[in-house]
Amino acid sequence: MTPENAANARRLARDGVTLWRRIAETLRREILAGGLSAGDRLPTEGELAARFGVNRHTVRRALEELSLAGLIRIEQGRGSFVAEDVLEYLVGPRTRFSEWIRRHNREPSGRVLDLRELEADRRVAAGLGLRTGAKVVLFEHLGLADGRPISLASHYFPAARLRGILEALRAEQAVTRALDRVGVADYLRQSTRVTARMPTASEAALLEMLRSRPLLSCENVNVDREGTIIEFGLARYPTPRVQIVFEP
Image 1 (tube, rainbow, N blue to C red):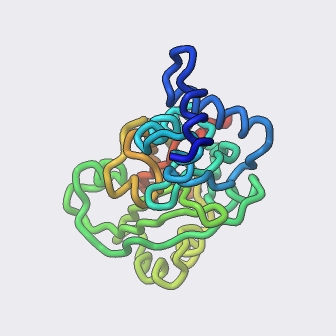
Image 2: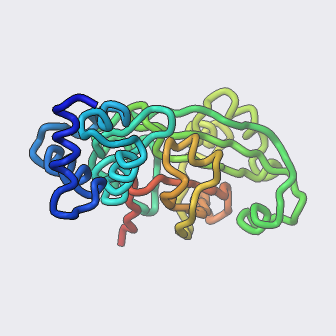
């Protein structure tokens, strides 16, 4: 340890204040003072440990505290970043991913994770108003805003009710355009049910979030203009990156 780092460690430890709390407070002041901007990557744990003259475990505890306060986000395998503004997801009669992201001056994009026909389990069948075991089409999609994961959505469509939906999704790789190809020119949100839970290992990895942070899980039902159910969806959003707001 260099003399300067040793002095840092002694300074942090004085007055009996826990080391990680003093590190967290120092970084908090630097972020709020504008020394680091939204989206900036923080120094690595090793670099911070050297700067403050402490071990990596102490630095990790300080970063976790800043993450819980919403000041930084920790991405597995990538490091820690100053948190950006929370994206408000406005739930109304017409809810579209691309429109939502563009309202926040971000660029929407995405990646198809799964696309296939399968038999509906009890939950999906109930959501679509079908019998258990009926054929449905699954379209699983990772939504991105400026290249960062912001949603993980599993869309289920009734295969018999929407003939050709599997082929349309393969061609378009987007829900609204695929529905238009099979004759659904517009659709509306019938219901949204929101719960909070801890992510699975797979969800945390795809959404680049900590498993110790909750995600928002939304169960959605969409209908066509005649009120016929055309989609049942399960969407997951990372907190505190996304806040759900219901439009009156």
